[in-house]
Length: 312
Figure (cartoon, helix red, strand yellow):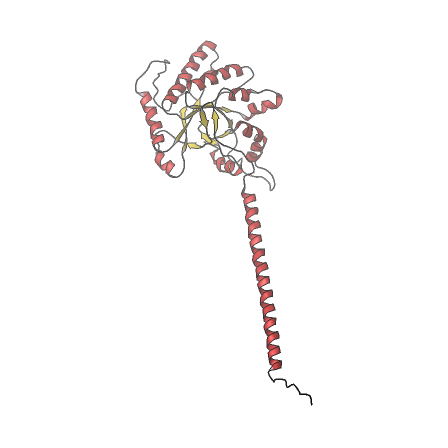
């Protein structure tokens, strides 16, 4: 007689429990997978968002402003803000301003310090040189760098012999400034033309020699650089006899960073775009005036890493 297998009254419950356990495993696995997918999606979204934000905030122009050698001199990019001799340099370096744009000679020919030369071009007065040295030493002791600028006025004199006397005086002043602590001197006010380029080039070459170990640069108008498109290389000729050339943007209005319509470039943006090749080729400094110095931040946002503000 065959034995009848008796089923436990708990057997069905055991099967149900097993099925339920498996079901919960599936549910948990699916939930974990969904959570993992959500986490990956969120992570990828954040990464793409960061990349997009970085792209949106990246400068429009890639001006590679690195220090370079001019002979045995190292020419470095600066962010030089206006400074007057006698101001508290320590307060400025304390907030990160280390490049000081200081005027040595104003457009009218007046000096901002006591010179060792008087108006008779050569008679020493004895005390002036120590004053300039005191100012530059104070800046250096506070961690500052002296970006001096010097207005040249001799080329406004029509008489060629008298002009030579004034040019010699200006060269003496440049030598004096260099001996007494100006890290660099930028010449301002040289209006280059086809007629005077040879004379100006000779003067800049002499000024570079007078500057000694100090760096010498020249402020040049956008129009002078653009003459290269016509095969006229006045800017290149000046650059060949000095340590750097700078782009003069003092004539831009102080609202040149504003955009008139969505999608359009500002005047500052379009100006830098027009000059992009020259700025990169010459490793140029960008120069603003005190009146439009508010454009500096916008220029930096566009990619400018080498700039200076000068007075009128």
